[in-house]
Structure formats: structure tokens, C-alpha cells
Length: 138
Ligand code: RTP
Ligand code: MG
Image (cartoon, rainbow, N blue to C red):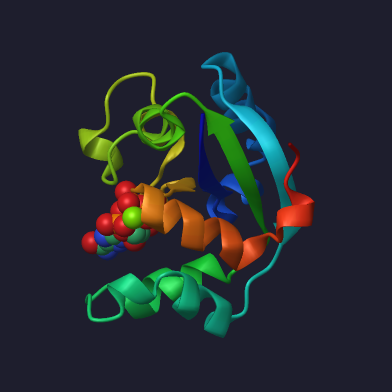
């Protein structure tokens, strides 16, 4: 069993598709082990996406991520990190496979509805960014 961090980004919350997104995860065998709604500050978003701080889109991305509430979740399942990213689809929704969350709901390369950890190490640090061990169900 593996755990990964999922975020329904501000555009997904505004579009009222929280339920649709979670339905897709559960349909594919991922279980929600922790969940919380929150609004990040600019500093929170900059810390979360620090790996991208040299990228040209960093300022816009971090503005977007603190522009409204998000839903943060710990998802658990077999190969949860890769499976979550498969369900999400490619970063650029125009390149995303049919039936993925981003193909169906994203409106730009930035407003792409969901975030998912990309490796075991990042999953661990990203989960700890939002949750304490007491928040995560066994
Ligand atoms: P994420 O981290 O959010 O799960 O997305 P990802 O791995 O598929 O993509 P990543 O390269 O990590 O980029 C993080 C987020 O930055 C925004 N982005 N904007 N304007 C642009 O060219 C651009 N490129 C990326 C997207 O919101 C992307 O998900
Ligand atoms: Mg990423």
C-alpha cells in the first residue's frame, strides 16, 4: 500500500466538482485516509511549490493556488502515486488522455483542477505539509 497527496485546486472547488473528482479516485480503488478544506496564503503556496521557484510560471501558479479554497487529501492504494497521476491526466489538459480529470475539467495548463505527488519522497513531504500523523486514518 502507498499513500499520495491529492489537492483539488481552487478551480475545481469553484466548478463544484469536488464530488466528481473524489468519485473517480474511489472508483479506481483509491481510499481517502485524510481530508481537509483550507485556503493557502501566498507563502503557503510558495512553500508547497518551492521545487518550481525558478520556473517562469511560479508567481502565477502560487497566486492561483491561494486564490480560493482547496481540498487536500491523503489517498491510499496499490501504486497510489502513479495511479493518481494516471486518473489526473497530463499537466496540459490538451495532451491528457480521454476520461482523465484534466481532460474532462481543466480549462488551462495552470487551472488543471488537481495536484498529485510525483514520487514517494515528495508524497511524504507533501502529506506532512498539510497533515499530522493523527489526521491520517489507519
Ligand atoms: P502538479 O504538481 O500540480 O500535480 O502538476 P504536474 O506535476 O502535472 O505539473 P508540474 O510540472 O509539477 O507543474 C505544477 C503546476 O504548475 C502549473 N503549470 N503552469 N504556465 C505553465 O506553463 C505551467 N506549467 C505548469 C500547473 O497548474 C501545474 O499543474
Ligand atoms: Mg508536479
